[in-house]
Every structure is written in C-alpha cells, then in structure tokens.
Image (cartoon, rainbow, N blue to C red; front, side, top):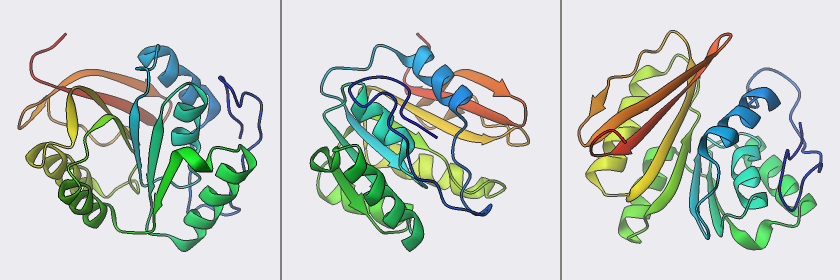
Length: 187
C-alpha cells in the first residue's frame, strides 16, 4: 500500500495484519482519484472509518489543505498516526478516535463543512451508511459544491436520493463499489 500521486508519491504506508481492516486497493484508489481530479484547491477532507488513513493521506498528497481522520479502533488510530508521521502530513491532519456518529456531531458543533467526505464503513453494516449520510445532510457538513464518496460491497444498493443528496455515479470493481453523491440536481 502506497501513496499513488502528489507530493508524497511512492511513500509506503503501514497496514495491519489480519482481516479487520480492509485497505482500499491501489487500483480502486487510483480510479477514484482519476474520477474526481482535479482536487479542489485547499480542500477540507473527512476520511470516515479511516482504517489506515490512506484515502485522507492521498487527498493531502494531492493538494488538500486539511484532512480529518475518524476511526473508533485504537489500532487504526495508531496506524494512521504512523502513516501521517512517515509521510510528514501530520501538521495538516486532525485525528479523532471516536465513533463516526459522535465525531459528526462534534463537527456540527464546530460548524465544519467538508469539500470531500470519504465513507468506508464496516461492510454489511448497511444501516450505518444511511445513518451517516442522514447526519451529514441534516447538519450541513458537506459544502454545497462538495462530494461524498462511499466505498461498499456490491450487495449494498444505495438510494438514488437521500434527503438533499443525489447519487451522481457508481463504479463497480469486482466485489466493491464506489458510490458518489452531491447536494442538489445531477451535474
């Protein structure tokens, strides 16, 4: 697992042994960034259910201004910190060792808005995806020009519309999918 592009291109990232954390495959990560490029200058990014932190790190490497990493696993938080130190991106990062829903409420209290929100929840926890999206929308955590990307298994079929969010794209890769949402009408 490595940083694919940007100022930290080629840096290897640590990943835990075992199957509890499923890092996004390089092929999917590369496809994701090809789809959303160019990154908004000085973007604020939220990497929910961060695991290794590789998605937020990739955003930072490609020019994002700040990334927020959220994971409730102590092991994941330790790996995220190591990866941020190794890539020298810790100064552009804020790490929260919390349940995603608790962190989202905290961000609401802080009046934060994000340009990109990447959601990679534990697979098969379908209700968690909907709950997370509803919290984001109801609390205006996504900027009006922002983008939500959800990584999930192919068994999960997400609604075309969730409150003010419109599904604008879905990409399938073997057993995983990336689903993209924006606020308002299709672009």
